[in-house]
Length: 216
Image 1 (cartoon, rainbow, N blue to C red):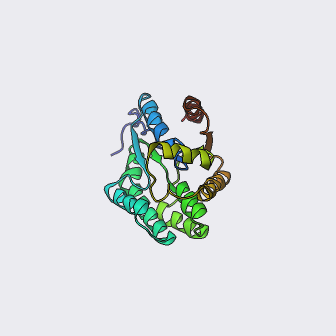
Image 2 (tube, rainbow, N blue to C red):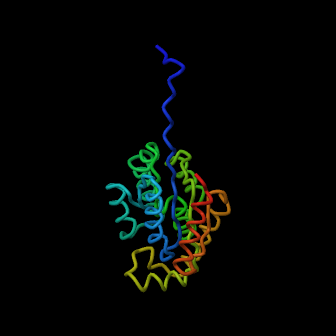
Image 3 (cartoon, rainbow, N blue to C red):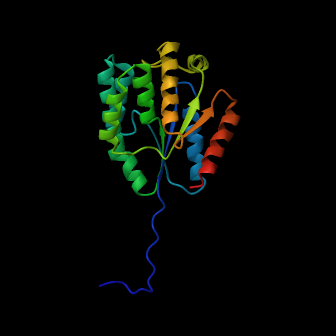
């Protein structure tokens, strides 16, 4: 039996949003993503803060392997996408479906930058894996923290011992930076480039402007 026409329909749930934070190691994205999560929560949004590789128990186990165990580029790439598959199915998609905002410290652009640019892995294979694993899912917004690799290396050296990626030379990170630039050029409507060589507060103000301009 149909409802009387005078009964209003239930309001649709507000859509969830997916924002990725990208950049080479040492660019400062990890500290700003936490501040962005707090800013969004203060405006009444449910925020899920996560990272890649990682975000789920299985993906975190795969992250440990990727960061520490020696392996060839194909094995590395397959592990990254396996972690992403579980991350999407277990955490990201359910959160977006209930209207949460998902903020992820890295997503697929990092794979194209690190494995594609840094390692020189076949971009066509990466694109095929992206299609199989993500079924079209991309962030609504990608905040790219752009920084010269030499500056990033100085920042990393001041705070922590390097993992298997961070121990790479400057030429590797120049290729990673170029990989990010290529992704940004291919999807300019999704990317917001932040000059992260600026003072911390100036970087934060740029991030706020990006979030406010989206007017979701």
